[in-house]
Image: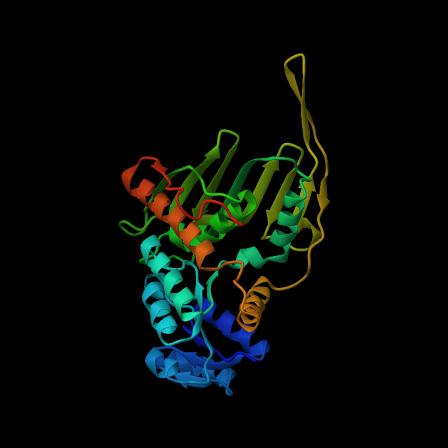
Length: 335
């Protein structure tokens, strides 16, 4: 069994620690905050405790490191882990600079180590069921995708709402379309802290017939996490706030035109079956499987760079107030 060390025991680190423990892979926990380290260490007494990453990386029996630290530390820490000869799972985003992401990809390939990015919703059973229906052509050609990731809270100080929330949605949209957008336009505003956007709206143009948008905010009165995929022959709604059969619905709406007059034929939403499994558990198991089987993760370095490239273009657009054309020389289409 792969022996895992989790670095960062904060809000999300606790969830990762729990899952790798329940999978029988947790060997160590690491946090520079000794109070936090000891508090979580009491829950997992079999795991060794480290206040320093270098000391953890020096342990030869640790095979892989899971990084759940602030986004601005991801690039440097992932490089340190790979240089130590360990596999690495990095919470989203991979890092903050596409060029650094490419360097990490090269380093992981040279070291022959797994580099995986925590785009958890790719592993959500409801999303995987949605993608299966889309890939089977059940909604026809995709026309438009929109995603909302809204809530009140988890306000960051150095990472804006775009970088905090949108990676998941970008990852899902790229997975469904199989390609990068040609152009992005992002608008937003900072209300609570200067230069830290609390809300952003990003619009993506893939082609004349395919567009998408993502609305994210941590200043919203209620939680709203939805992905809507509109096709030529139907629509699918993934509402991650709902539970049970209401989470994933297929609408066989039809619009016909007779004598230049559009007519809408509405249909009831039909539940789509999906596995009842925790997405994070599936993601953690996938990381272990990829290491054991020497195969690339679904959210590998290349996928992480594609998401990072879109995020970077969105940030440039947000800063400049203008649209940004994307470079399609690399990572354009998914395999």
